[in-house]
Image (cartoon, one colour):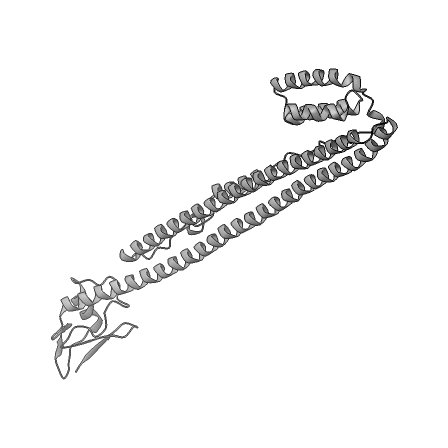
Length: 339
């Protein structure tokens, strides 16, 4: 069998079959119409072999159509290999960018949750401390008022039922003060938990939305890579890192949640059983009826003008401190006004 060797790649032709290896390597510009000429020029001589002969630059048994198809198949195979390599490279870049963006999105969410927890705990501590301070103040006021009241009642000659009634009113005032403080405390805690829950839910919703957008972007990029592979395109995709990244609106949403939590404020509590100094109890029994009518009318007028119960009660306590009203009249007014 005679062979004609062509090119550095070692493509061989025999005299009976199509090329053993695709004849494109090392032969530029080969196509079906000029393949015979190229082979003739490459051989340059006539010869004979066991299975056929070459005469005048032609090869006995050579099929130019088969050679051309082999050349095309080699070209397509090379193109497909390049496209597959580009596809693998693009998919690797997509996966890397996706993992990086996913980690950043999750990291920002976790950091936001930690900061929300810190802000909530800080506010909770302040709320509880405020209530504890007011409860302690109410207790001290009650104890000091009892001590001074005993001294004043004894000096004024009151005893027996009058003393018991006065002491009962002090105890009642102290109990009402504690109730008021705890009501404000519970309301503050409820408001704080509501604020925290709303901000936490907002952060979670933003996180889920950001992850959904990221997944959608990855799917679109993977579809582009698939289409490029199907079209045997060997081009590298651009902008993968910028497409698979955190949306600024996501970061803004997390910042808003933190700002909302940070702006929480609570209603301060107040001990309403103000300390009544002994020397301030100066109202005479004969004046009690007039004082009752006077301050009842004033309190009702204040209420009709929108004054809160706490404001009215504070004013009545101030009258006791200033010596304009005794604690019995105060107790009667509180019962009548429902404060």
